[in-house]
Image (cartoon, rainbow, N blue to C red; front, side, top):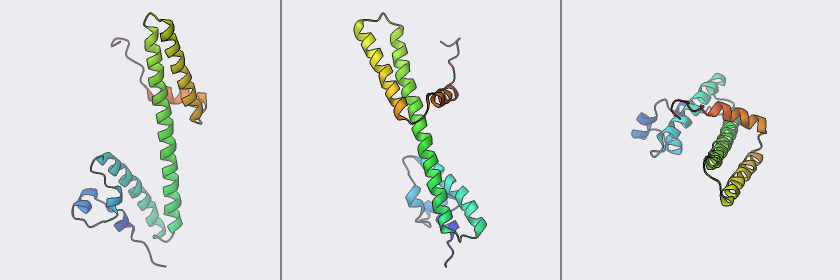
Length: 147
């Protein structure tokens, strides 16, 4: 069985390899419009490459299963982040209405926003307890002096 050359698959330097066109694998993750995503992908793959070298590159299934797990965790994190941010933004809008003299139309809008928040949270697959914990850790309470 041929041994994979992990250093060619995941070069040390993103820019040097990309600019010199020495690594076609970088075209897969290189995104000039969003370099932070390139760095994130490269960092993930570099960490994986370090572990890969421990078994001298023989276990091809290892890299695939670890990459699958990494993607699964990132998708889960993204879904939780989206749920928390979306619902908190919606609740902020609903709370803002409370500072106004509310008409029956305003109350209906606020009720719909709260209903929408409940639907997003319910559809997230996360428990309310988990969502509350995520919200508490995601947002810094406003400074009372700046309010």
